[in-house]
Image 1 (cartoon, rainbow, N blue to C red):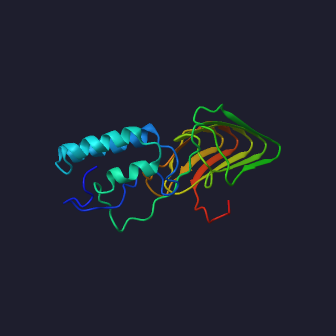
Image 2: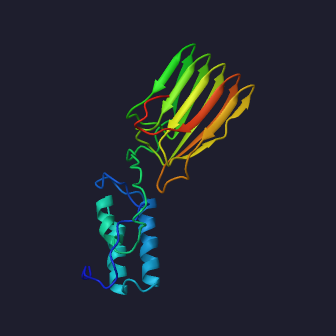
Image 3: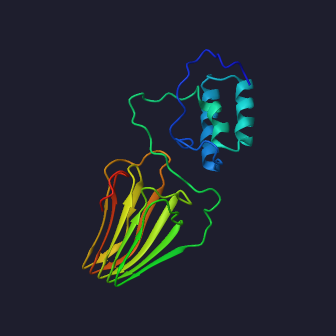
Length: 215
């Protein structure tokens, strides 16, 4: 690879490539493609030479962890120094194809909190009860988590960390289905989509800070 003392300035690593912590985790094709796109743009703009471009592209192709990707783009992207630290999103490698999970609540209450692993497809059956899905400390098994609900005479509360790409598409009859967000989605954040049917009850998806343990 070329001499690190290049003529263009060095900046922090881009915020949308890799986690804030856990650089030993395996990279996904999406992360690898972001690096490749950045290298292509840098070469087209003349910020790296043909030799640097070829060497970095080869390194990106064989990279296995986020730590392998860091040196390839560290000197290419400028970030706003005033930007707030990004949320460290946790994802369990190799489990994106896991089978759907079913949570059933009948005449009672069910809670999922702490460091659990919601599947990509999560179904919730709630009859005359209450269900709380707290995703603030969850380890996601996919970039998207689809929560399919069927709720009658009860309530379902979905709590997500700040920066989550959140949507509530559930249909409510004699009830309510809402999504409360406080800021735009953060780069690299998982997407949580709530779908399904609500009758004589409510489904609310909302942002809560991890340090706030209240419902």
